[in-house]
Image (cartoon, rainbow, N blue to C red; front, side):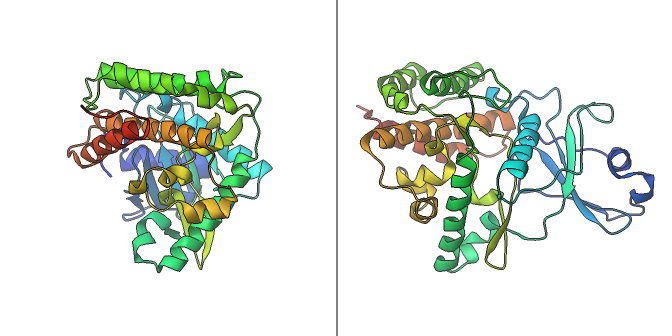
Length: 328
């Protein structure tokens, strides 16, 4: 996936990064030892074969001069902190971190190395799988996601703070940040920004039911799941985690918006019962937030085609309708 946030580096700089992480004796020589993993949307990632044959992945944050959306600031630090939490406090399979460098001496951004996961990306192969196998993976994902959500925070909001005891204030602030990002870049949502704000405010009392901050991934789609021989062997890409309401997790999205796929296998694996009325309202607010991000981020990514934007615009209409708004 092409994006201006991808901070590609020269072969010479990659070698310097490898030397710093693994030592001079493991720096590869010759050609063909690195290739870009192209399915990510935000960071650039390289698959690298070290001189001794070990395979690793190098992940580099966006260039310092590229504007990102408010919720993406410090994303790599968030990922590293989330990986540490999951490695030390859960049984969820996540990558180990071989080396992380935040000095910005070799390039203008943070980066880290992790082992290469020899497995299939579920998002890439899902459509080729028999339905039963695909659903089995989603049930496994639901169970793993529940384990992640068992981790409690002291307050809602970013892992590094500042936090807030009110989920309503945190979530409505998240929506406001995204809307401000959209207004600053003149993104057409198909709806008046003021009306979107009013719609969120109208239903914000449903958020007050959430009183216990839980670790949420938010971006845990099948494209961040690595599978092999019928098992989930690794979950990758943790840079959007925060403390919030577990219902905001990606796996629940299809419960309100069919365009995101059937959520029932995930929910079954998660062990969540039928959503109450208030929970459905919250989940619809979370759907609106998601599709706002999906529309607005296309400008910040510098997308050269409108496919994602056009799709997200339709979903904004759908989310607004679910929240009682219709075009007259």
